[in-house]
Length: 126
Image (cartoon, rainbow, N blue to C red; front, side, top):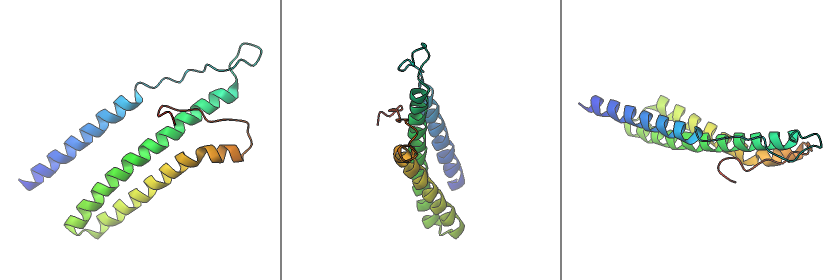
């Protein structure tokens, strides 16, 4: 009976995460509207900046979701006293923290390269 409850919880969490991820990313439109370079074509730096804004936000969102998932896995691993699961959960949390860090520092990284690209707001608006 306990195994059925665990399977139901896992399947329901997986279904909720799937629906949330599809709904979060299905309404994003990246229009290449920007300043004109004189020929009527959009400026490539604005297009790349807008794209990098979306990439930055995706890194941060995936990182936060993985941190939440990893904390849940770590709690279950401590409850079951499973060292292998503890190790995997800690590795997932560390990877998620790196994703959030890279997403947050992406503007500093791009500015340090002196490419003349400014990162757009993305879909979060930050």
